[in-house]
Length: 570
Image 1 (tube, one colour):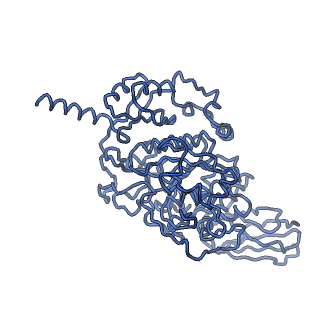
Image 2 (cartoon, one colour; image 1 turned 120 degrees about the vertical axis):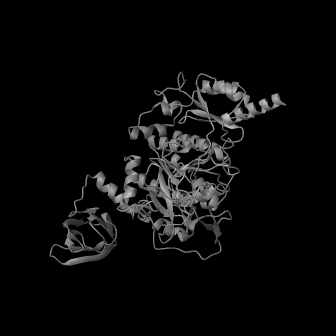
Image 3 (cartoon, helix red, strand yellow; image 1 turned 90 degrees about the horizontal axis):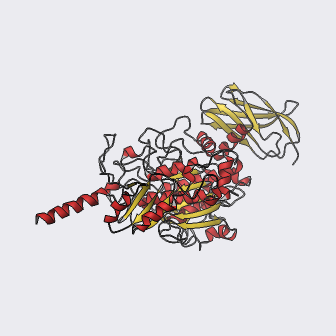
């Protein structure tokens, strides 16, 4: 009996030593990438031409993180008798499967193995005393969303635009993205990788006909099960994709209907284990290697089916969770990572964002309703190290998405506010491809409704993409605005002008245009609520005769500098 008890205790001690990232699955971390057959000098062996061009464009050197995991190391681990699932070069390791736990000590004894994922008892320590210890309610973004079908409802058409947005009008108009679409910027030439739980029926729905007919689904990858069949597992990714890529005139048009897409399944809907963060890393690496510009991830991680794997609030510091480390690595490769904030805002025990939304460079998106009011479920900041999150917000309550029956539906969740922003960001970056990722993101944040007074619910607020476009245009032309100056874009003009100026507080702004005789030609008044850089637009000016005019701006009781402008023929 004593011998049996000793054996049982020894077995218990061994199984506690190694923490499974999934039942019988583990992460093996390597010490280095020495003696690799791959080299920094020959990146074409592991990166596409487009991925290399992105690094060249933004002066990002190829470095050791770009090198694949050493295949000799992978082979040596496999030879011990385990199944290799996925490598991750950014975390320099592999996920493996084995139900023979005795093999784990053999793997860890290899000289190039740093560790096999160790167990860590979750401590439920929260630095905020007004929250309790139960964090078991938080699940990935897609799990807490509700769907209301309104396929038989009367279709709305919105205002007169070049595209028929139907019921999806508000979610793009709210962020003022329609002017970019009207000017022809609909994501052409940009590539968005969608990391999600599956894309059921996406290859069958009319919402995506134009993507498939025009060859804009560039590729698929199933990180969970292997292979390329991502049209399984969940409809969640299909709904996410539709907010960007749908083209159903009169019903729903996404924010980037002419972008190219990679569909990548990283989430296993049947369970929730830490392996999915490593899947996320492998999926992001695949996106990078293809040359994708933007990653949309409507996924988030805090707790798991095995409580030993749970994150604690202190892990949300931008440097700890595996998915977060990978997300920041993706940003360092020149991509933009857009991630949903999460749907735990109503949970008193864990209202905060999860991983990888806590990433230093990750563009984290909260949710508002159609009226711009924060959705109660939208997860909040700050990060554990005190950084502002979310970065911005978009419509995530009653968001219009494609439905599995071929019509449209509404759904709630930051899962849908995130891709709305990702698609519109692709259109903005399309105009300014010479600018690096952080310059694009900073302009979007500067256009936010709360930029001058951000908070941990709205972040920088609802962005104005047309204003962000004009801010970037001014910056590209070296324009610096003083409190008294204005800038008119374009100048000369034909049928519309935009005016950039600084506002010192909320005020009534009057814009007037005079001809050379001093006669008032155009006058407009605007209620400006945004402090700081503002962009106002006068349209339908084609009736004005060609010639030279003077434009003046009166902000409150202060007259700003006037500017000469030129009207030209079409």
